[in-house]
Amino acid sequence: METKLHRITSTAIIYNEEHKYLLLKRSKDKKAFPGMWTVPGGGLETDDYTNTKKTTNDHWYFAIEKSLRREIKEESNLEVGKLTYLLDIAFILPNGIPVIILSYYAPHESGEVALDEESVDHAWVTLEEAKEYNLIEGIYDELEMVDEILKK
Figure 1 (tube, one colour):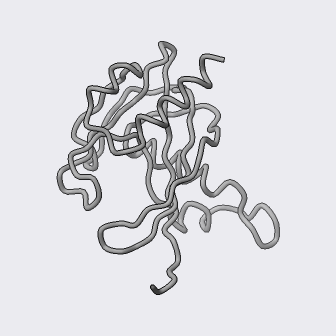
Figure 2 (cartoon, one colour):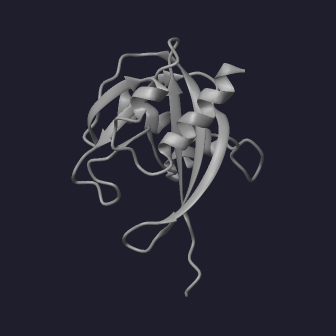
């Protein structure tokens, strides 16, 4: 098998004051997991950092965070508080491109949900209610991890 560069993406489990989680239903036009429910997120783009001032002479810090905040805003119109790392996931897209997903969680800070063309519906759900949705595999497990963290 040929070694390939990975596409870097990130996701955010967003929770509100009632400890409900934001789910988005993916468009049926999406290549991966069409019509399934997930959380906001997307791919890192070079524009997420190259159009900003470098943090050091050679580097940009917080590129993933900037990218994830952009994706959250585009997909849901929400602003979130502190993004906290949860875990990483590796998978292969249907077209053979390997992907690394960095999963975070964050409190909803402001804004009302307004969807872009990538999603066709949204819901704020409890952990128990999430069981009723056709979630991408692993999303429920991540919601459960965050729920445990928030209970502490």
